[in-house]
Image (tube, rainbow, N blue to C red; front, side, top):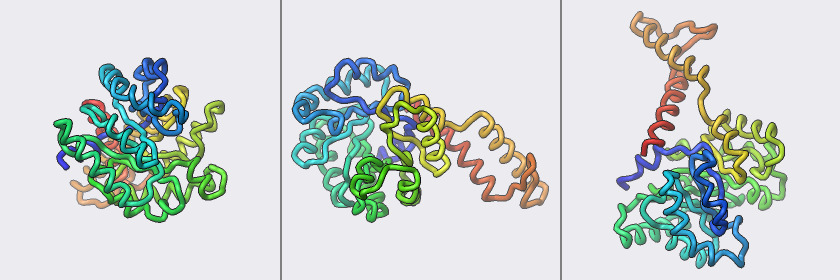
Length: 300
């Protein structure tokens, strides 16, 4: 797909869920500083409001796009509702669809086909809209490698911590979610996708320190961003998933010191109290590349 490189350059540190039927929240969502606004048609919308939310969706998307926001839509899992959701959502400017409770690679393939048909119908480039797969069951977790490679439209993958915990009959704690998230990161990296998520519940809106710790642990695990449900969580995620000035300074210095060492005929060099060899320097280059990727994604 022609737009895959563009999609993969986008890394959203914070993706704020906003119920698609809540006009007041939508009207101010662009001002919340989230990297992306996720118009939610699934869990955030009561069953009796889902039809109205779907009808409101095109104007909500256009309104947010008019404010320069990156817009994502989370559709429903049930097939009939999912098809209607996607029909309402696919329009120029939409960045991605979030597909909850993914069953397996065939599920993504079918959704991909539907999106392609609608893109063509709306005179859009095929592949313009990305997909973020949400792994929320033990069965899907066991298929995470094949899920990650199911479509070139996939730009990210995440674990729905609450639903996965429910399916597995455990609490959504860091201890219980660490192994699933490690599997997610490995599968995503191997497939060239962005891994998203937190090792805990995004429902923690009252304890900022706890949520901050979740975000810091997620970053250390290799995750690049996360969904959130409250505006107060946005700044926490943006900070946690942004390299600090000190980290960037060290990375620039490390790369420069190593490149000078190579010119001097050395394969390793001491820099700021530690030895630098190729793997350490490559991590520094990845950090610098991550910064450039974030800036380029804002320019798209």
